[in-house]
Amino acid sequence: MATDKKTIFSGIQPSQIPHIGNYLGALRNWVRLQDEYNCLYCVVDMHAITVKLDPEFLRGRSRDMVALFIAIGLDPDKNILYIQSHVPAHAQLSWILGCSTYMGELGRMTQYKEKSQKHNENINAGLFTYPVLMAADILLFQSDLVPVGDDQRQHLEIARDIAIRMNNTYGKLFTVPEAFIAKTGARIMSLQDVNKKMSKSEDVNMNNVISLLDEPKIIMSKIKKAVTDSGGGVKYSPDKPGVSNLLEIYSLVTGKTISDTEIEFENAGYGAFKTAVGEAVVSELEPIQNLFHKLRSDDSYIDGVIKRNAEKAGALAEKTISEVSRGIGFVY
Image (cartoon, rainbow, N blue to C red; front, side):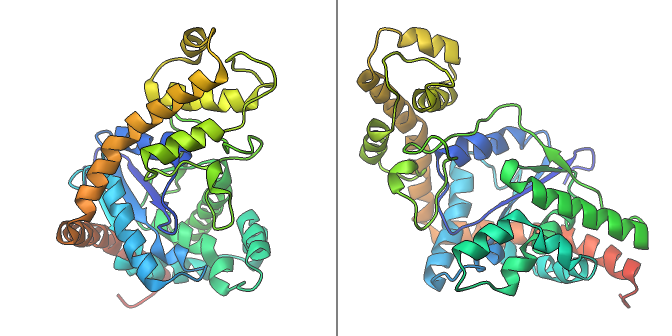
């Protein structure tokens, strides 16, 4: 990796295929970063198993995510695209960091509280120590920047706190990461409940979300079923959250401004507007889907990318593990 570039790390769970909100708010921005930064993008399968998953499902989804990374435009030779469990140093560093993390810090984590309520039949230790592993993910590569949304800021803060605490105790072991806020992107809301962020989980109404792998006819159907607002007019306004959400999606996939889009549809009804939004989303996603399916038909290629990139990530991780192990007093 180039020494004159800052390092960005981000990870995504393989338990669900990303949706259009993930793509427009984060994934598409990753592609724009690959020439300016050293980028590591990780399929965090170790995080995924805090919830019980079928082993074959997890294996397939992990390969799916690597294929999707490439299909959206991430070059596997410019970026390090790898699977978390293929780099054991994630778990190794997590244990070390866990010994400098306080129970009270972990107990205050919002995501732990929410997930333990949702999965109260499986409140496991991994769910509780999840933020320590996330901190290890970030600190393992001396990451300068971490792309975060509002729901991940608390995890970045605890990673920073752990890094500072370790540095104060043992000397400079870690780069203290900063949040990376993309210049473009948006908070895309649910298609059926515009008071909630678009989210995909096992109990959600699937008409709420557009998966990156939804077929065109399904995308069109979901857009046409999307809630709008009383009164006519395609306007971006706080009192028209449904239409505003669709305007946001249309603007981002076409590159047109909200104002230009309002003018384009000033004499159109909601039906015509929704059709245009659906067609624009289909046009954006079809090339990604076509390349994804081509890549997924060749497991040997995907597995080769996974192996090569795990080796690159492992070599970088070993540098940090070596320095940290010596710093804390291990015979290394």
